[in-house]
Length: 302
Image (cartoon, rainbow, N blue to C red; front, side, top):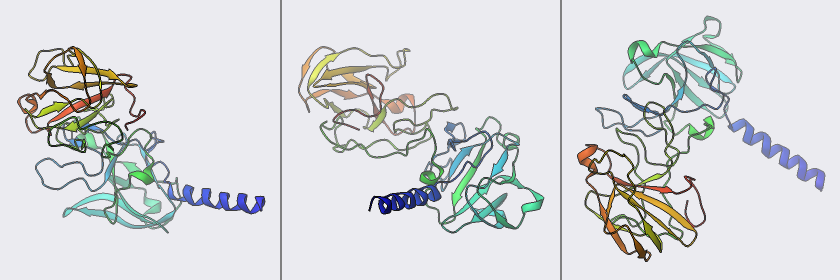
């Protein structure tokens, strides 16, 4: 019986491994996803500038001229890709379980048709900087069925945006009882670990959606301290507070506290949301919620 269990476990491990793709670009072994730059963001579902469409793929960071690799075993079925009615140099690879499009890629002459193995060099990244100066150069990776390829790419640092579960904390903003997190907009994304614009740093909190002027509540009982100045420039949203109690310590930023001192109960009003639209027009207004130790997870909350 133990031998049978080991065989079954080995089979399960091989199945999981088969579902994980290899690197698609030389120099990016973890398939790290492009963050946000002046052209937009690279995560699946990110809004597109000047369009109601969202991003149907993910953008894996890839320097211009880098070798492009096959993410899995399969067959090259197309070498010119049409997306939104426009033709791009690229490749479509179909395997036993997957079908994916990679672009912009200059395909190597010797493999323009036929079978490719996982990890094989299939071409080179084209010069993206020539068309989009200052962009984070990247491969656009899109599943043929438009589903999210992120889980298969196994990005080393990106965590897909997820709603904030309610375990012990109360709602922090009026009209947002589930603490719904800001998704992606023209300024970036609100989930923990989201890349910051120009690829500099990661988001060390989460952004809970909150309309300008809405009432803000204490997520748990504790002691207030402050003020906290996140921007250090005195702009219209440069204010916030820290709450500590019951094993938690959190900063709530871009709010105007009713007071900076004293003890508050869970769910008690502590202030109001500041006018974020005044500073960042078109952003999804939100409270920045950050653990004092900057960790993404802790006891009693995500």
